[in-house]
Length: 321
Ligand code: AMP
Image 1: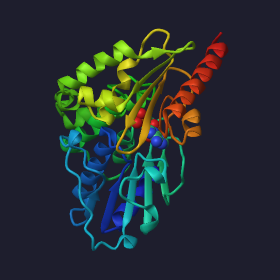
Image 2: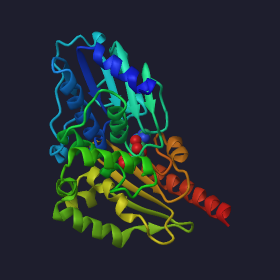
Image 3: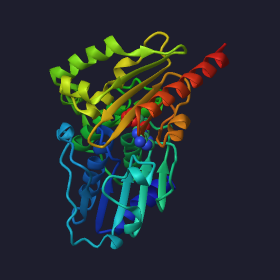
Image 4: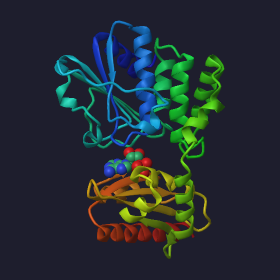
């Protein structure tokens, strides 16, 4: 048994109360891995108390329900397992320093070190994939219910095995999981991808109106009035970014979505080649090499981000000649 997996299992076995956290702005990978890990732990250790915490997202309730931490819990005797979150500021609902011991499992490039054990692989397709690796390297056991959660996370984070972090290892692990549990995996796509008509109409607006810079940066500015007109929410608007993949001549895509309540502009950024997370970091954000994000304070700042990404795209095009 690989040491890091073995050590994670050993620590989990030690603690009676375990809190499983993930990043703000939940997505199916983050919620899927939280709920899958909770079930894995409870199946092997039914007497432990395990809480999967974080802001409720009604969109993902088909994956399972989250827990509220009871007020009387003495966190400094508990284990925190933080999933899918590279930086302390983006952990939803927990502060690592309140806990006796912290395990971090993540597939983002390292930002903050805050775990006593850190299982980090930024070449893994998803955190659900890392949980599957944990299963197959320890005494945890896969079940159909757990497999469904992990499959939802892996297929969603890879956009149905489309993104470059989808590897032979991903397919091997998923094939093993599907063969062993025999889940009806294609039926999982319906709850994951069914969306309201307004969202489809809004996608039409985006296709019509996105602009492209000289060096292939496709961008769209989605202000509050547009969001109200189409009756979509800000996170839904941003999540449509993947629909602009594979357009000839578009190297980088940026969605700039105004969040009036939070008084900021959320930037979602994707790349077909240039490494974008370093530019995102300059704007206080971060993420993966080809999928990043940031929170901006003004439309001027948004314009500067577009300019910086255009320069990056132009250098990339030069280097490819
Ligand atoms: P998104 O476009 O929101 O799906 O985010 C893409 C990637 O960028 C995710 O892996 C996030 O972890 C990362 N990311 C998004 N927003 C931020 C932010 N404000 N700060 C740091 N990383 C971010």
